[in-house]
Length: 221
Image (cartoon, rainbow, N blue to C red):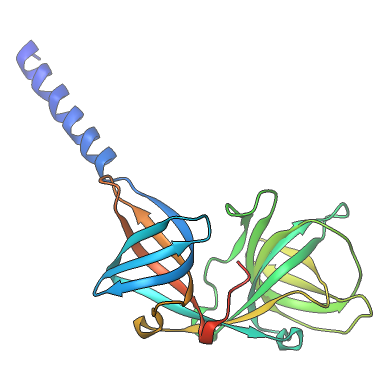
């Protein structure tokens, strides 16, 4: 191959690499309250202080989160729970999300949680719930509940997912939230939201999905 042809090939490869780098984006979670919305332009006062400008994508998904009681966790449902690891390998829940059937299987599995250091997120099916007591740290687990039983110091649920399972301790005061489909009409000033947005190479944020606290409620995470 001639030097000219080699140079052209290298230049084309460089252009392709730059193009890939320019199209790469990162997704981040923005928690806060809606300040204003104008068409596809959303402004959120974040819990960290600044007001953030976000653009709603054409395919943005909106979910509503509603406070629920611990008794709502029953065998066979699909849940997500944030928890911390205990010395015996079990997890201590700090919150539980109950998903509708339409979202069964979403994010199934167990993984570190990027928003809370030392915690994990697990999406799975609840296999059973029995009595237990425990202390300290946390992870997040999404699963389907298989069985539930009362306990003096809380409850323990066994979550199953593809290729694994986790045992999660449920304190009596653990926040429980129902998740249901929502729509853009919920994005009103004052609504508490968690916006999952992709930052573009020009610095703008494009919302991919949004969780809204229904009727003024504040989701635990």
